[in-house]
Amino acid sequence: MDFFAIHVHISERLCNFACMKLTIIIPVYRTASTLDRCLESVVSQSFRDIQVILVDDASPDECPALCDVWTQRDHRIQVIHRQRNGGLSAARNAGLAKARGEYVTFIDSDDTLAPDTYSELFQVLTIHPDYDLLEYPVYEHYGNPRRQRMLRFGQSRSYQDWKEYWLREEGYRHCYAVNKVYRKELFKDLSFPEGKKFEDVWLMPSILRRCRTIATTSVGLYYYYDNPSGITHTTDAKAQKDLLDASLLHLSLVEDAVAYLAVVNIALDYYDLSGHTVTLPPCRYTHHWKLRIIKLFGFKTLCLLSHTLHLLIFKTRLKK
Image (cartoon, rainbow, N blue to C red; front, side, top):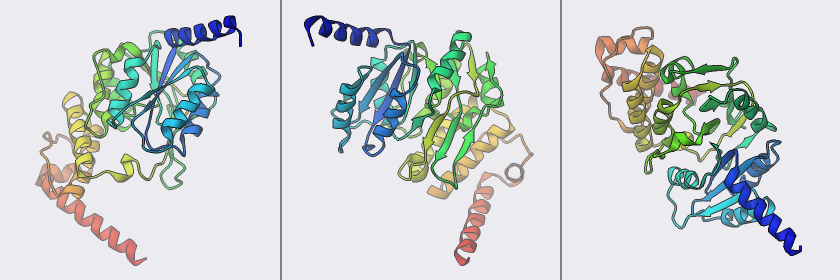
């Protein structure tokens, strides 16, 4: 390669990192077996105007070397090697600090994208430049026949009131940081909370309240792979308490009957894991038997009843 070619190559890399339309942040930790699959789905996207930031969170396996290999394979990819493991929030925050795109999105390094996902999403964003956040379909727990399901948005909608989005789309059920494209300025002076589990659940309302327009679309697809070692499979009492506290915060901002029941179910799971009850906001609803029990006898009674039912169901299954 002659001097002119080298100069052009370096200039292209600098321009790419300075002028990207979309920054894709991918935390990497103990995912050596899935990282190639993830990145193949990213670099093969027909939408080319991307900056990919791999954040190696001091992974003890082959991930750091794999990240370096990928930076050589595709000039749009760069890697941050963290010296200490800080967790998912710290990794995403490190990526946000280096993001140069007008928009930003997140992918977990054991997940993938359907072909042409970003092209389809940016066709929507080009038509609707006022959208600050665009949420697209996700195949939840992909690869596990007993749990996988498609979260679809059958009709594209836009919302100027984040509370309307939260309740109508039941946003509290899918507070994923992934499967969304954000205008990068939404994250100014905001960061994922470090030291907490379900960090995206904590942050999402703060992001939504900054949005002038939130939209959902039926195009694109994120494959959220089922991970037996992931947080949804390995939740302990502390992690469940983090989820519950975040959900109670949501409920203090906006609620309806369905949202209230969702928090009740999270609180019941916390009781099963810890044996501790919590104080819920006063229950004003009676559309579900659990809520009627709370109104008549209190939440602790519901916890004891629910726990007993779970034990009976478990014993019945063991006998089969």
